Length: 410
Image 1 (cartoon, helix red, strand yellow):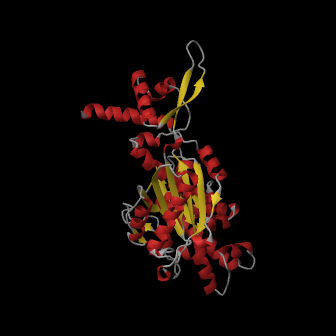
Image 2 (cartoon, one colour):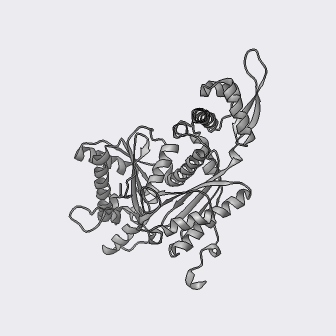
Image 3 (cartoon, helix red, strand yellow):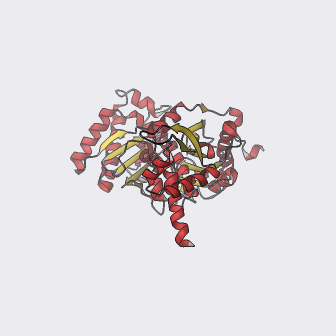
């Protein structure tokens, strides 16, 4: 029995993967694309149509002799997936169809004062609210959260979080999983953002690259040969913890928005946000020189650790660095440590984490359909269309009254 079921599953996987590009194909094109026999392709398409994973599309006119044929396409409405970018300042959620095309999304201020259970309920309500608003009967199949913390290699535990202490441990993850009621994947936000860059950005698949996530906090991720590296303890790339040479301050104290504001206050500089410092480079020249030196030091560390071709910066804080400043840092690092890494902003901007979370949920859903990892990696993703749909998708926001009620007030 096993000798026949494995090839059948692999054949089904190949046909599904071919259709998950979103393009409509007739059966002859599927035969040519997959290399499977005519009888096999026809049988698999019939089975997939019965399962409502595939539907008939347009009539195609073929050149030369022969009749017109009917195209088939993957049923994008067969499932919904969700990606969540949970940050210390904002929480963004996107719900997409089974081809990764955004249908609805939201952006809200993260209720930092909520308990672990309150925050979990609030996050889950964002998800269920969007799904209901889009189409109540649409089946949600997978949810992924990228969060600001050190996550264990198996994704079950938050070992530490500088900006959202209440998510530490397992209670927050367990509660979200219970509330959403579908398979949940959790990852460090930097690693999830790197997944987004690999799937939808302009990084070459086989190029070693480092991502520096610079927002409310500071994180990093690295990809080698198209794979995001994960450590067992979740500490891989936590360079923000490193002290600056000869100083008590850590790298994150000067390279993240919230911590830089706090550090500036110790220098007698009172600002509401880090952007105020960069907006007045003459007044704050000394402080900004420290910031640039800290970034050069961090890039030097990752250059020696991984020899990346590219160092990508993402997150709101990273937008404060101009292109000329990043080029100067790249030149300085090359001269200092002998590694030439192009330092640039992300093409995806602050959407990298959201797109990475969505990609992770798609991967989980496709795996549940029986598509092999090899076939998933070979799906010809329409990056332009995915980004276009995300940009065109309206962003909703909850009202103040929709914030979680503290336990003490209930």
